[in-house]
Image 1 (tube, rainbow, N blue to C red):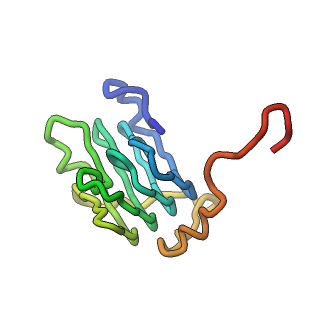
Image 2: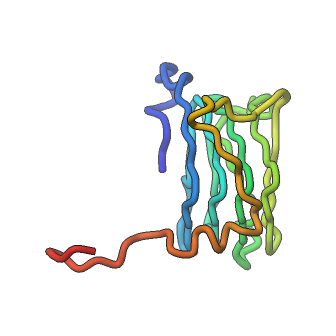
Length: 152
């Protein structure tokens, strides 16, 4: 899930995206999501045994990870949730974790200063569920099991 055109397309700075209620099952490699510029509220998703990283970014994105459920694999090289593509200036980017659950050695590297809270309008606003409820919330999430030429 790549959000943003490319690292030179600064018009994406105004992008605001919510990634919610997904189940990213074992075997996925990366980009759940990967954000260029802009703002991403990553909330109430389930991540199981990613192979490289779960949430990534480049070009100074703001990322607020809230109420997610991260279960790392046994691979000691695949424990970090976050990855930044940069020349080393990422420590000023606003990346926060709030209320996430980290299991089997999973960890999130926060950075930057200041608020990362979403700025939803009253009609868009919602309360994030506790991360411990995410396995139940995402129980039926994922790809559909459909047969060609038949309704799912």
